[in-house]
Structure formats: structure tokens, C-alpha cells
Length: 92
Image (tube, rainbow, N blue to C red):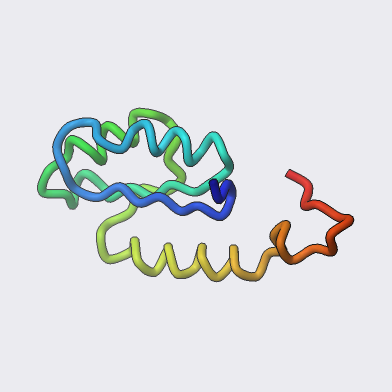
């Protein structure tokens, strides 16, 4: 598990696929982005994900990739357990 370094994205689809993953990602400190149902052809999956209460961002399609790039850049600049000396651990 990558914990806080995880970025989950839920796009268009029907049903509630992804709700368990969304909740797991948030439980472990990750970030969840969901396609805005108003800009989705099929609103089932984005709406189900939003209903979990575990979503950080609801964005139109054209804003999702830039958001992932910004988040990934921020995560890459933060120290992880692997970046610390062996006698230290990151606080969680």
C-alpha cells in the first residue's frame, strides 16, 4: 500500500464500482478525484463515489489531469520513509 502517496481517479461509468477503493484510499491517507457527474456521460460511478464522503476533488474532465500532475509533484517533493535515514521514520 502506498498510503498518502496514492491518488485515485474515478471517471464515467454505471453502478457503484470503485466505492470500496475510494474509501480504502482515503482510509490510508490518499487523495481521491472524481469526474464531475455534470460532465459525465454515465453518472453512476462518479455519483456513487461522491456519496461515500471520501472524495477530495470533484472536477470536470479537463481539470483532472492537471490536478493529478500538481498532486504528484507535491508528493514527489515530500520526504517518504525511503528518503529518511534508517533510524528515522516519517510521522503519520
